[in-house]
Image (cartoon, rainbow, N blue to C red):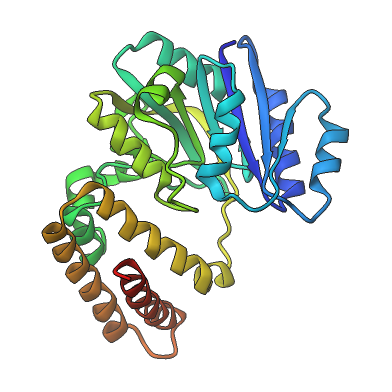
Length: 301
């Protein structure tokens, strides 16, 4: 089999159904299977999806395993030569599965690839990053991504070049990896509940000497939440900060992490000072600072 497509579902019945429909509508001339891993949803999505898409393989978890651990359950039974991790809130816009799979098959040194993502308004969306989390990464955030804009120009998160481009990591929304590479570097780390797990995986793939490429011909819509409430979610910020700290602990020394955390602290403080107190951005960074401090305490307990 060419490709195993793994989709994690958690109370996203309509989105997952749209995603599945787009896969069957657009995927041609490539053999594939779809594995849906449900994280103990309570919205009746399991039965609905089973009734509508009887050909898929379904795994039902007894609790919310998070993103990486749930995908690992799918990997265990996957038969494909290549594996595509596809978010439930995505829709394929063309034959992206074949485009990605064919590229991996033709390029022995490439371990991972992904397509160009578009948001719900069909505007270019975050598809990859040119650098892994690092001091340079934090400096870029501090200066409003100015450093990255200078180095990478407009291609820092979306591929405008019209040709394959080497990148640091592909977002987990549409990441395809060779099965033999995945077996070599290991599955997603179960330590990450959500966020940074794909970054950690890509980092390990880099360390094994494989390249990671962005393919602009593969087009996927990512219906990622853009609402005010999503931006302000305390729980989301907490998980992001904890995963961020965990990533640095996995890949850098303590002295390096101290510098990174100082930069991140200054980033938060500068934004709080800069933004108007009535602005939602002020509240966001103020809340993020509290969450960051809490995450730091938890990481050293």
